[in-house]
Image (cartoon, rainbow, N blue to C red; front, side, top):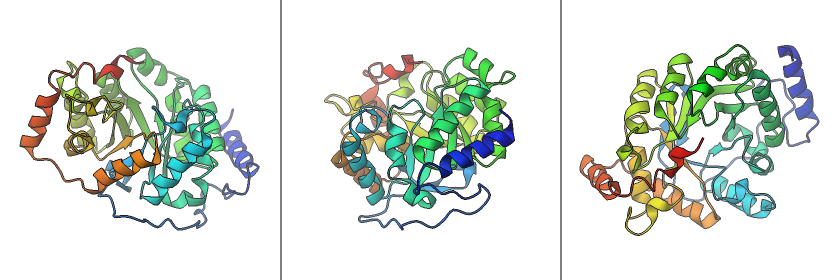
Length: 323
């Protein structure tokens, strides 16, 4: 499909999606929606690398063991999204492959579009497949643009080869950026840090979402010492995921709580923020309370945390085997 057709398709599709969607041309400023007001203290904020966007250090993950990614749990999902907005979350992470996650977010976020930062992903490796994912994501989210669009779970050399081949997914990313359908680009992965580095070296991505937790440093191929130096050199915005390892790092015999799990990831040089999913509004509120109280950890405490995870790193990096 030609670029002009893509652009016209997106505008006409979104205009038909309902009154919650801004029907403006992509080059014009968005309308002003309801103003979000925090009901509690404010989380620390950081600039997300070369995007220049200032965001709270904690964002909401849209997958994992959470109602946001499960069918028939709209009520519970909406309650979590409402709590996130109420307590100061502005970064919302989702993907075309996260079940109903985009649809649930699309029921709440459009009215606050100017005040939230929406990130989605495509697992497609070819140009046309990536475009289809992007079009679907925009319709589900009821928005005419994404703040960041990311290449999802880039794990193998074959992924890199396909993405950067003729008519690969990177072409869709370039075209969408040129048309202002996406503001920034990104690459994600939780398997092989060398593959993420190769991606960062082949294209000027604005962000990367990678596995950064207190056990990963003991892995034979750690993300922190491999990806972070390259990202820092390029001023790439780094978002940490798998921070509590789906809760495993918080079990007896591991860390002493989310303060250590979140504090460790956010205290690594080059990490700008993290995303953590929530199973309930209360769990989300507890995580936000930790983020509000965050202070960079001293080197001695970082080393102590690494000692606590030295013998349990394998069970807390299980996701490294996922594709």
